[in-house]
Length: 251
Ligand code: PEP
View 1 (cartoon, rainbow, N blue to C red):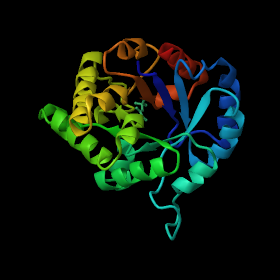
View 2: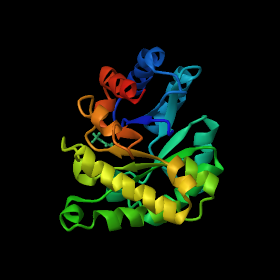
View 3: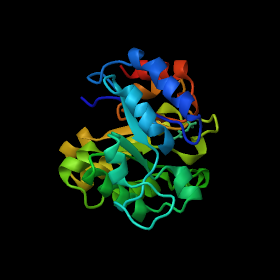
View 4: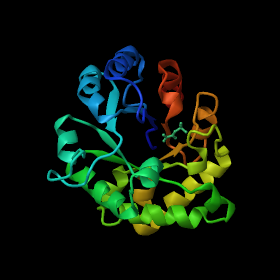
């Protein structure tokens, strides 16, 4: 039995006080970790404040990116060591917006995924095809390639703990959701890729989220699918009531 994981991705939204208030407002209503993992992925500047507010409750803290080096001359970057120091639990790696606007590549995604494990951070690795790739029937090959490259070189124990977020680019922030069947089909393929690269044991343990215009109206159907173990949510994670509904659906 895989534990559902609902992660909100605030992207570049909210001021620090708004973020801290959000966590204070939701924290007592979040179900226990034994039932569902609830993650808030906030901009870096929020992290010290929300992790303080979340401590002793069941809200886990995620970052939205990081560098793979521990320190050095990388102006503007944040290292895995720094996130570990702030007791961050998860880190989103390779979100399509980072691949599109900030030169994130499969190679850097792989380096960051490995670096996460070296620093007690659990990676949420994002993969997903463009509309053009979907229309050309390239989805499965493209996404399989992204998954293989991201997980390359991990141990079985590490691979088991990776969270993979399947996020078709055409469904992110557009209001268009893949149908649950379309989403599940790709998630099933992702699990097959993990099985081929590792083992059945690993592939059955790995959690695969769907992301792309997830909202309270469609979450239950998505979570009802055989290979979807949670959701990575942008827009609908910004409002407390909507986010809580998503988390409750994961229970
Ligand atoms: C995301 O940011 O990963 C995402 C899926 O955004 P949205 O839910 O707004 O489509």
